[in-house]
Image (cartoon, rainbow, N blue to C red; front, side):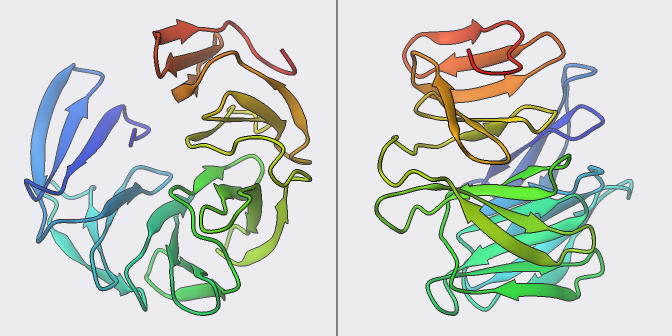
Amino acid sequence: HLAPDGVVYLLSAANRAVYRWSSTTEDWISTLATVGSALDIALSGDGLRLFLSYPGGEITVFDLEQPSPVETPFVNSPQTPFEISTAGEILFVGDPSGAWSSHWSYSPSGALVSWKDWNYVSEEFVWSPPNGKMYFFRDSQSPNDLIWEEVAADGTIGIDFDSPYHGDYPMEHPIRLDPAGTLVLIGSGHLFDAASLVHLDHLPLVVADAAWTATGLFTRDLFAGLRFRGLVVGPL
């Protein structure tokens, strides 16, 4: 996870630690010791709070504004989260409770804002600030599909929408959006319109990861390493 100040946060469940690397100074900074072997981490949009999830549903937080951040309790999800993420300053949680599974949202104070069951399991929730939407797959169902779900500024979970394809394209992680919120790139190399989820084109590679910068799209090919794709603003 990359914070706005350039600090990268890396979870090591085995070492019960979150390691911090400054991309500005190109050096390690103090490690955050965790109370147990965390399952997942999520960073708030302003980079000031780091959330961790644990077996059983406990979710904790580090206040990164403190000189020596200490992990403290935040909320308890009904069941062990399969993924946590953030929508700006809102904590967004998926767990297997309710019908199918549930998505939960919590305010910065830890108050429950929204709960929506009959929902989907996904290995990742990817937030798009310009769109106000969380993007994910329905990994627990076949055929898989690409979906977005609205999350309002106050954390209210709104409508969801899935792509008009059901098995036509291989839905593989990761999910990556361009900064403007116009394109969605997925691990199989396929590109979709971020609003309509209509298929646009595809890259001739398997994407292990990808990131857009001011100059264009960088991809890490699962087999060929890092590649620069140039400025990508629409169908290739």
